[in-house]
Amino acid sequence: MTDMGPLQYCLGIQVLHDVMTDTISLNQSSYIRTLLHKLHMSACSSVDTPLSANLKLSQPCPPTTPSHS
Image 1 (cartoon, rainbow, N blue to C red):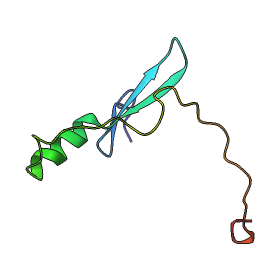
Image 2 (image 1 turned 90 degrees about the vertical axis):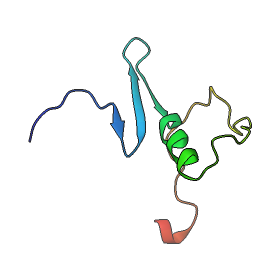
Image 3 (image 1 turned 120 degrees about the horizontal axis):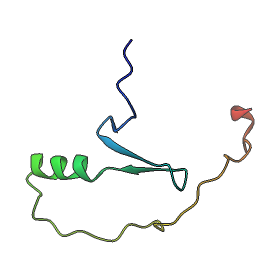
Image 4 (image 1 turned 180 degrees about the vertical axis):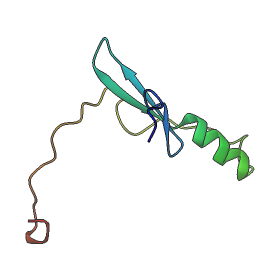
């Protein structure tokens, strides 16, 4: 196994680690552009994302159904 340095891309998703704020951001813009080009949809109009850009994720909630226990 070889250490190739900090993770930059994984499965088409760009991974950005900001050491100053100790945050990790995921960016799919390159993957989306490639996919739109492949599907001949590059000229389509974009829409706003339904999630807040500053959404803070927290610990997962405990299981709500017996099947997840």
